[in-house]
Length: 305
Image (tube, rainbow, N blue to C red; front, side, top):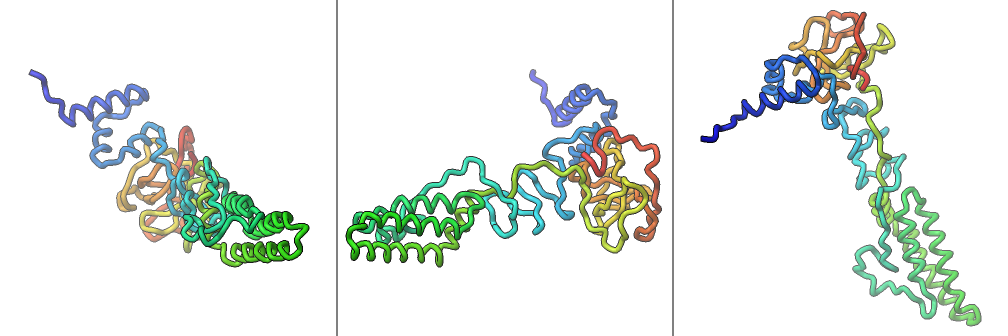
């Protein structure tokens, strides 16, 4: 008879294998306790290992994913498609973006039959396609695209160089086309830039994971390793950033932490609470600061990856 494999058996096998692979002496009971809390990221921190999905990037105290989001002066922004061009001053070309010109007329061609690509013998279609491409070229200035478009249209009218009346009519038509995009092409330009650009280039988390506001606290004092973090209670706290992640006490609030420490909402240890030693005495009532003397800085620490 085939024996039934329970979740408990599977968990035990997984953790035994993981422990052997990483050559760690973490007690199996502790591993199971961490699993029961749903804190796999905490477990990895016990090994001194950081997973890609557990990394914590901060932008003005807010967690963000550097793969799909950007940290800007306006806060966290979606990388692509861009939702707010004004909040993305460092936008770059979106990988793989290819402009798809649609001739003379708005995107989708809803009124294309009423915007001809020719004025008699003058072919305006190539100018329109180039204008579409220019709008989608990341960081191109709209007015520059429009002016180049106007120049191109007038140039196409040169086919009437020996017919003054036809030349005049062609140039007048070119002026209508130019006015249409220069005065009313704003939404088309923004849509093209949002599709053709990423809000920021590919980046990794900055080395320092601190980034909160210290609120009423003064600038962090107590040593170069003192960094300002956000506690689970929402206030700023000066904490020793060189505290190793391995072996850190995990927490859901400061009441879970030893005296002299505070529960950090975010740190380089991952997206879970850890108890961090406070740097100075100017802290909320009830907290007693401790020092970071003789701390080992092997592996990730609260403030550094």
